Image (cartoon, rainbow, N blue to C red):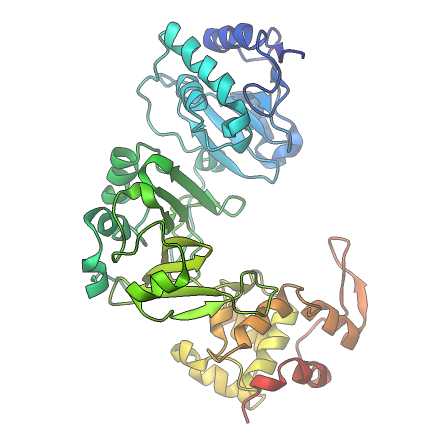
Length: 473
């Protein structure tokens, strides 16, 4: 089988290939293709302007790509400034941008351990090659230099000032009795849920306990970052996009955010049972014997109706923002999470306004969620204001499933309807009602320009069929 292709002798104008990368290239050219991961070549080349036209000049001046992944993503060496090593950054095929390592040395060491957080380089098929890479790095005495944490996404955004963060009432984590029954490792982990990534407690835990890096930021193209520490039985998710009013996005620059610790998978490697439930519980009955009857049951997938999966939930703080959940479906699964809604519509448009107007008049909206907007809701109820006015004032982060009443089946039905599942789709219903036209991205959309009450009335008969079981009498 062929070896990896290496072309590092002609870097883009204005750049030099570091000696270490040349040495790695010489070694990699002797390795069998596929043994180090899923990629074809090590090649120094200019970053395509198309990846980010707005920052193309900056990228091409201060960085060059050296490795391409099968999905079109690139790894690049970035000049971070004087007296600092070049960082390694991921330029994702969908526009995501993040720092992989603060130096080339750190990247190679992470690669040798399967800890780059890039699946194509970390998967099991590359284990033998990574072992060989680790031996080569050890023989070369390669060590990661001390380097300041580099935030590639924020660097791309330059010095752009962030918009003001939303004002929100401060809340303090106050543990519940269930929280106090957890072991010390799980208690410490649970206490981090909902904290900012730059909080000292989060940094100390992720770097000191897990031995990982804290993601410095997230963005609209990369709204969540996972930190997996298999040996410790923990995998964290850090995101700025928690759909909970207590956790508004915190801008870092105009296009990046400081994420929160939003979710955690807990596994046996944490070294302690949770509420005395064994990690190898063999049946739902065994879990029930220890925890009591399940809190509820859910379908295995959102497009299924049969409720087959048992779950047990417990609030861990008195404000009920942080929850512990056990789930049993053949195997035990345990998670910690910040309470977050599901997004029915991320970016509201005229159809969202029409639905909101309809939902208010039919009693589908949970109006208790919006005490500040009581007068506006009353005006919509009497058709003196439109749904779009409420969307503009109260739903700046979109329409969420928990903005609807908490009654059996309503939120599930709305989720399917907004997400084109099980033969239900808002767009199809509104095209049927108003006709269709070409949308800006090549897809047909309803021929609707304004959520007038005439438009709501025209759509109401079909919407009444969809939501008949939940319309307030």
